[in-house]
Length: 183
Image (cartoon, rainbow, N blue to C red; front, side, top):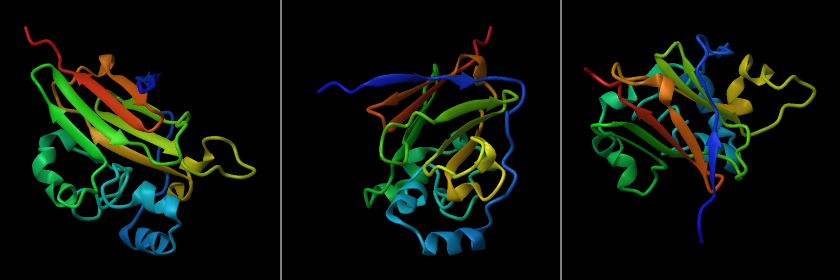
């Protein structure tokens, strides 16, 4: 059976259209996660790109992380040995690749990929709809109760104007970032 492939628009405006107004602290996350439903465990659990614990210690996913400075085989070995990792990244001579399972129950029509000032790629989406609210207000409060985010620093040689993002089978995100041509 062939998997469906859908192009995701990558916004490359000069500034992020929103800022994450509230930082996710470690104690707040622990309290939130201790009362977690199965969907919250899928969104923020071990091995998810959006887990604050993905990198071995607590790291707020709304802060930019220098992902491509690390090799995924080494960095995620503790998760891969138990089959928990749903994310991978790599670098070739041509560019950078990020592959991740998007949390939720499929039909990820609300996934957003944004490049902030050519320096940070931001991946976000909602896993739970807010009631009586405007669409983007979830990002200004306790966003982890409604959505997910991961902000990643771009490598210096990244050609951010030519990023491509696709969703496969409604649950797998693939982002390709070419390297700049060096003359």
